[in-house]
Amino acid sequence: MSYQPIIIRHLTFLSPIQPSATVLFNEGTNVIQGASDTGKSFIVSSIDFMLGANPPLKEIPQRIGYDTILLGLQSADGNEYTLKRSVQGGSFTCYEGLLLEPDEGKKLYSLASKHNAKKKENISRFLLGMTGLDERMLRTNKKGNTRMLSFRELSKLVVVQEAAIIKEGSPVETGQYMSKTFEYSLFKMMLTGIDDSSISPTGPSKEEEYKTKGRLEVMEQLLEEYEVDFENSIDTPEDLDEQLERIEQTIDKRRESVSLSERQFAELSKRRRNLWDISQENKDRFDEIGKLVERFQLLRDHYESDLQRLGAIKESGTLFVYQEQIPCPLCGTPPDSQPQCSACEHDVETVVRAASIEATKIQTLVVELDETVEDLHKEALMLEERMGVVNAAMKQLQNDIDTTIAPKLTEGREAYSDLLDKRSDLVAALKLLDKIQKLRKAILEHEEERPEEVESVGENIPKLILDEFSKLLEDYLKKWHFPETGRVYFSEETKDFVIASKPRSSTGKGLRAITHSAFTCGLIDYCAAKGIPHPGFVVIDSPLVAYKEPDGEQDDLSGSDLKDRFYRDLASREANQQYIVVENEEPPSDVVATINLIKFTKNPHEGRYGFFPVVSQSV
Image (cartoon, rainbow, N blue to C red; front, side):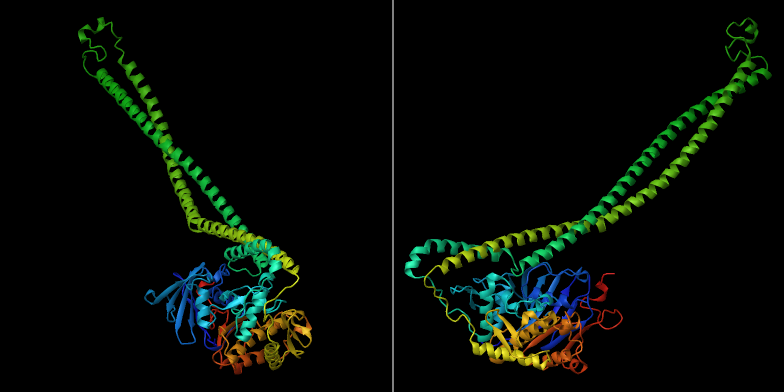
C-alpha cells in the first residue's frame, strides 16, 4: 500500500434554464471565503453528496432549476474523471476527462450509489480503488469478525461539516455504539497502513461451545440478518436520531407549505366557481333575451300586418265617401239596390273611425314593444360586457391555478410524501438499530458468562505510533498559537485526545473546531509522510468558528493571531495534499497569493456573488 492522493478539480451544477454554477480547485490549499448564505457550506455538502452520500441534498432557494451535478477528479497516476449525478440522488455516471458538461462519447460506465462488497461497479469501491484502499477488511467486534471498508465510512475523516467539527465526541468516532470497534479499526489502519484481514475470529472453548452453541448461533444469525437489513434500509446510518429530528422539522415545514398551497388552491377554485356561476347566470339571461327579442319581432310583424290591414280599410273607406256610388265595399250590394240592402247599414264612416282607433292602439303597443326591445338590447350589451370581464377573470384564475398553484401543490405533495417515506424508513431503521443493540448486549452478556474469553490480537494501536501522531498534533497547535498548548496524547479509554491535561471534549466549541481541524489536517500530513493510503484531500467547513461564536472568554480567539498562522501553515503544505477550507474569515494578504482563494461577495455588482450565478438568486 502507498499514498495515492485524489485531487478534486471542480464542482459543477447544470441547469436546462440557468447558467451553470462551477467552482474550480487546485492542488494545495483552496479557501472559499465570503458572507453567509452565499453557498459556501452548500459546496461542502455537495462534494460529500458526490462522494456517495445519499439524499436529501440540502435545499436552498438558489438550487431551484438545477438538476445535474458534476465532480471532476484527478487520480495519483494523472488520470482524469468526471462523475455525474442527479440532484435527486441515485447512481453515478463516470466519464473520461474533466468535463464541464456531459459528453456521451467519453462515458466509461455507471456506478451504483451503495457500497457492495461483492461488486466493484459502485462509487464506494471506485473511490477506494483510486486511493489504494479497496478490499480492506476491518474488525467489527472484539471476536475479530471483519467486513470490507466503504468510502462512506472513510469520508467522515476527510469531509468535516460544520456540525461535526464542533461536536463534543471524538473525531475518530461518529457516536454510534454499533460502529465503535469498526471506526477505531479504521483509525488504526490509517495510522499503521495495516488492515485486519489477517485476524481470525476467536470462539469459545469446546465445552462452552457445546453448551451455548445453539443459543449463540441463533442470536448471531439473527444479528447478522438484522445488520444486513439495517445496512440496506438506510443510506446514512449515522446520527439517526438527529436525522429523524431534522426530517420531522422538514415535514412540519413542508406540511405548512402544502397546507398553504391547498388553501390557496381552494380559495382560487372557490373564486373560479363563483365566477362560473355568475357567468352561467349572465349567459342564461343573455339567451333568454335572445329568445324574447325573436318572439317580440314576430309580435311586431303581426302588429305591422294589422296596421297595414287597418290602413287599407281606412283608405278604401275614405275613397268610398268622396267618389261616385259603387257597389258596397262591405257587402257588394249594387248602388241601385243599396237602400234595400239588409246585410249592412252602409255606415262607412263608422267603420273607418273604428279602424283608425284600433290602429292607434296597435301603434301604441308597437312603441311600447320597441321600447321593451331596445331595453332588452341594452341589457344584452351589458351582459355581454359583463361576461367578457367575468370570463377574462376566470381565465386569469385558471392560468394562476395551472401555472402556479397546481404545480406547486403537486410538487409539495410529492415532496411531502417522499419525506413521510424517509421518516418511515428512519423510524424502521431506529427500531432495527434498537433490536441490534439489544441483541448485541445479549450476546455480550452471554459471552461474559464463559470462563475463558479469548479476544482478538492487536486491538490497540501501538503506543509508539499514537505518541508520534499525538506529537504531530501538538506541534500543529503550538505552531498555530493554540491557547494553553501542552502535551497532547490519545486516551484509549475515551478514544479522544487530551490536550494540556484537559480532555478535548471538555473545551468550548471553538477550541473543539480548531483541534478537530488539527486532527483532520494532521492525519493527511501523517499518511503522506509515511506513504500510507489516504484520499489525499480534506474538506473542512468553518474551522475558525471560535471567531464567530465563542462559548466564552477562553473560547474567544478573536484577539490572537491563530487565524493567520492556521492559513500560513496550510499554505506551506506539500503539493500532494489538497485542502478545501470554507470560512467567513479571509486569509492574510501574504497568503492570498500562494493559495486558490475563491471569494463570494454577496454583492451582484462586485466580484462573484456566490456559488450560484446571481440571476438564479431568489428575489
